[in-house]
Image 1 (cartoon, rainbow, N blue to C red):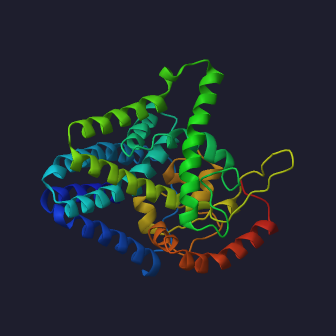
Image 2 (image 1 turned 120 degrees about the vertical axis):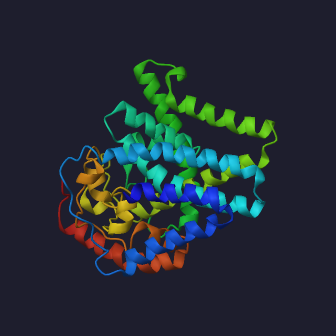
Amino acid sequence: MLILMLPGLTLLNLGQHPGNMFWGAATVWAVIAVVDTWWPGAQRSPPPVGPQPWLPWLLRLYVPLQLALLVAGLAAAPRSSWLELAGMAFAVGFVTGGQGITFAHELGHSRSRIDRALAWTLMTSVNYSHFMVEHYRGHHARAATWDDPASARRGESLWRFLPRTLAGSFVDGWRLEAKQLKRTGRTWLASPLAWCCALNLAFVLALAATGSTKMLAFWLGQSAFAILLLETVNYVEHYGLQRAVSADGKREPFGVGHAWNADHVLSNSVLANLQRHSDHHMHAWTPYPELQALPGPQLPTGYAGCVLLAAVPPLWFAAMDRRLATAAAVTAAGPALG
């Protein structure tokens, strides 16, 4: 149920205390990072359960909450100061990036067309629709290889990684969509990517044409922070891990040692078990309540803390160098699980 608390509290704060939104979001972020790192017993989540049909509904119910939060932010923007506006964009982007993109990712892995439509809706609301193509057709095939723009290389800082992944993922998303349309004999009129991007462009142009400067700043600001969170998490998830690629281009099967994991209960609760990342890549259709905590490479703390560490490269490298050496030794010692 923590899945619904963060957007609900942010919406409440937006309506009653818009000037405090930055500090509200920063406090929540800090609490999650502190609990993950230092609270006794918080480093292990409950074991996976069997099929639970009601749990995916938490993600579906989140979608209208995010849309309401964005509408409320757009409505509040014109009467806010620029300082308040920056805090609103940060707080809302913390939700739309930390949870909205995470849940879009989970819904996009569903076999339900309705769930995938909800995923497109969430990604369109942060102006990053190409993720819906590049992630499933590109990243899952190439993760933990040098061909993947969303996998960070050893010694590569977050700030060097970001330009590469932003440009590479955008280009790959459109290239993969064009390839799919050609293969199926369809035109761009049948592409959800084209329609979603056209909608984004039309909305931005409408705000600009009507002089809604603060609304436009809020819309782009929350999107920018949401995208920053997504790509920082991408940086963390496979940093320095590498699958073997043969001379003919055949990739080693994805194994437990090719993604970083963190089984911290609080962050897993608000992120739908995203941190059980090895199992997710090895069994991409498995719903989040059924993901296993595999004994793969382990992060020093949950994603909330790792995002902060990654922002300061010397701290990140100091925390990860020893873990990378251990992960390499374990991977070399045994075959992939699956």
